[in-house]
Amino acid sequence: MYLVFLENRAKKELRKLDKNIQEKILKNLHLLEYNPFLGSKMHGEFQGYYRVKIPPLRIVYLPDIKNKIIKVRAIGFRGNIYK
Image 1: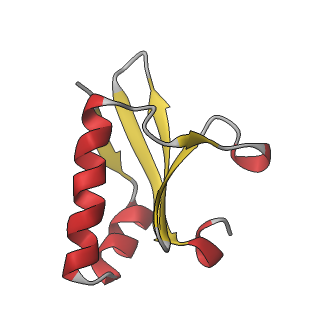
Image 2: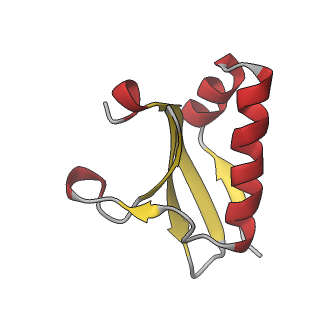
C-alpha cells in the first residue's frame, strides 16, 4: 500500500472544487494507494509522471516506488493543469 501525498498546489486546487467532484477525486486517490500505475504515463516535459482522467479534470502524480509514496503534483481542469 502506498502513501498519497498532496503538494500544496494540489491541496489548493482540490479545496476550490465542488464537494461532489472532490469526492470523485478522493475515490481515485484512494485507488492509487493500492495501484500507483492506475493512470497513464505522460511524455515530454512531464516524463516520469502519470495522470488520471476524471473528465474534465486531471490528477497529475509521480509514484516513488522505492519509498512507496505517490506525490500528487496537481489537480485541475485539462486546460490549466499543464501550465
